[in-house]
Length: 230
Image (cartoon, rainbow, N blue to C red; front, top):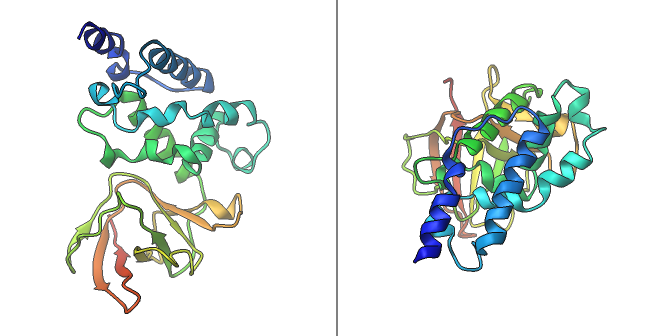
């Protein structure tokens, strides 16, 4: 019982205001969070429930330290992203992506998560907009799928999709998205840093209209979304 009282006291910093302007600010928070884990063996003893900090544990998976150490020459810096914007955007494409899913946090959301999401917004806004007519999202277990035709879907997180037409093969649920031809909020990461997946991410708060829902013989649920003006 005393241990639980102590961890609640020692973890108060998680919900205190924080400003992340440069990589060293991020490292300072990560080291403090890691010391908390080392002191209490948080996840081994399942204190993560007591912390009530959602997916914040992703911040300690090593992605950020690796990216900070190797951030001197990458495609994102070359198009005008700052060091911290480049690091955050690259982490979003790695194991740390769950950190940015605001729908998986209880209230209040840790201020550092809000700060990182704002940096991600700024980074995405500096990318070229996608020019195409179709995007696919292969949904995972946390993506909403219980839609009705005609309703609006406005995710409070950056929604990642793919320009690879076959990216959803083998998945049980996929979003098939028609982006706006003009004024789209779909940011094309692969225009800058191409890889096996042609990743395209919609900015937080992008509104979509559910146009249709189909269940082909493959038992796959296909949810057709249309980006609409905000």
